[in-house]
Length: 198
Image 1 (cartoon, rainbow, N blue to C red):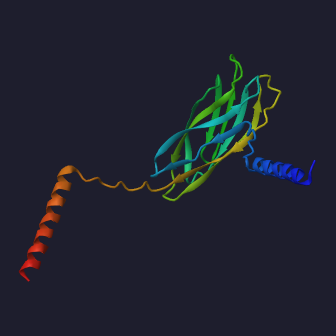
Image 2 (cartoon, rainbow, N blue to C red):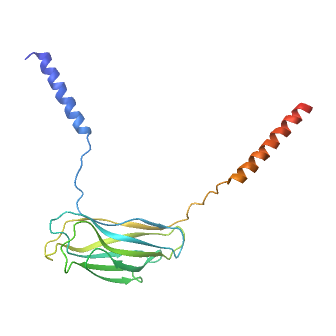
């Protein structure tokens, strides 16, 4: 093989490897226990959001969970916890300490897979404008239906924020546009007349 040919092949290989290095590396994120960010615009406003177990891929599914939600009670409280996808849910709300405990079980049904709703949490703003609180999740346990095998997972916390809603910009209706056009027309005619009379 000639030297030129060998160099050409080497350059082709280097270029191919360089192109592969530019490709994004996709990694499986795995099961994630999460709660979304919440924004409200006034004290007393409430929003219902799910606590999720996302991307449950183990064949047996998830059979039981115990999750704690912690929050700043000077900003937000939990008003209610409603059923998600599990057969049974047990919850306790302590808005003095800012801790809500949620336990769920599959009793008569098979384990759950895919994206699973643990519970729907009703969050109510009690702080003033600009107040913010971390919605801090702690997974105490996450089991397959046998109650022994744990499911590996990560946690994604949320944030609760009380902020001013953007002011609505009033849209001009057709009559207002016609009136405005008429005023501008009169002003233009007045300026033309003044110029001619000078």
